[in-house]
Image (cartoon, rainbow, N blue to C red; front, side):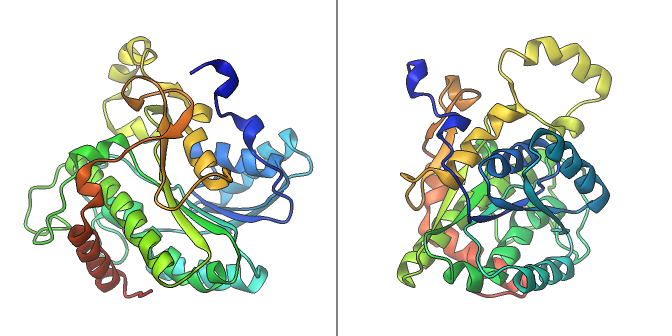
Length: 306
């Protein structure tokens, strides 16, 4: 692609009057998304598990963008009660929601469970966002041309859904297998959600994005720190800074040309780095029966329904 056609932050339209939630907005990709939206005059809700870290991130952004409208709100996706109280508080404060950016995520952590006993990676990356989206659906319906963006990963291609062992209740857990499954779940959810919105004539689209290989704290669990520092020069060849990694989800959230079920990722070799373009997810992510079964399982596990 020639440089004039690369999609960058200069392509972000004016967002005056728009209300946007970014989950995990205090660090990594989410931080850069909040920065991009706030710089274009949106009212941004920085939804974060750690309110103290979020307040520090907000101060940092206010130094860069003095006019930024950023509201820090506590949201712990590993606790369905916290998800519920966040949605109640949000609806007391706001009457519209133009973009819900389900950005927060964890990557390749050792086996553990959420407060509700859900497997941690599926619970955080998919089920928490599934419950959040459901409980915001009434305000999304009330907002014309609204948008829900789910953040997946290239790892979805290694994901396998096994509904007889969805949360590794019967063993077989590995940090990578679980992560890949959660990222496949993000896409299955996006495509099923988009068809739900169409069938119910809701003026909203569901889209997805992935950041390629981006330099964020997600990599903290992959290798010991000393190994990471040794590998860093090599990693720089195929890794991109977090602000570039955030561009696909930013584009998915604001590009006027985006359509339901679009998927954005980097334009470089193997989608590892580069500027955001429309990309294709794998065949399994489009499997209708699998997405329907995941939807039913997600409703049962979270106790929320659409």
